[in-house]
Image (cartoon, rainbow, N blue to C red; front, top):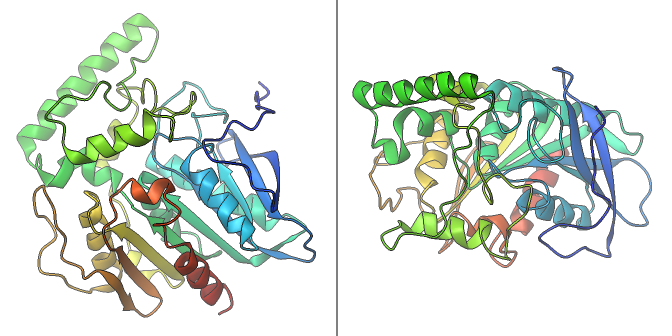
Length: 346
């Protein structure tokens, strides 16, 4: 079935007059057709460095990933922001399900596509993942040697959260058993009903005692700042049973063997910060005091840059998790650009 692509500019950010924009599609190795927005700087010639962008987890390309792609195109890169399989304008049935290996394939197929464009230098391709897709980006970097630089923004280790809960607060056999029983009971109901029940997106209205990170999500996904009609997080969320495999998935296997460059960026006040710190430790062996502190987590990596060879962790002073979705005065785009340019030239 042909994809239904929107012709209108329906992003949550203003359109730039410095870049050209068009819709494109490409297929992954599972045969699923993915929809993407392609951005390229105006009045350029020759082969350009390229970047594929996706995320956050449960968002669409008209939200944060599109903003990143457009900004990096203004800085001289050819970029695409794409919807993952089963979401947004991309193909795949049933809708609103996810799988870690499939998401990695989505990123790799984006690299396939970029590598074959006439105006792209295939030796200068990078990826940027935001939130849960920051984790997918790192997982992809573990496998795809064509990617010269990987930037993981305000990243989530989704398998860890699915397995252990936030801040590892449900890291027990008993908690996991209860979660599995509930999901599998729902599978039975879904089969009987002939449809997948949705888990619900960001809670709305917010309860008075909501933790700060839920307030931050609400302020992005449920307001004019970031709401989009195709976004799972803005609306009815993922299928309840759609990501059960994440709880039994190991992320970032052999990340210490990644030869190409990786930059992990978190806000100082991000609730997800511990995941980025631990991922950096896994890549480099660098040690911080402790990495499993319960909420409210204050972090152990120093504000600023921690570097180990071509791997970097940057903690942005004062920033929250969602600040790095769209706050252009806070997102360190200069650092992202310089990191990518430095490492695609190696």
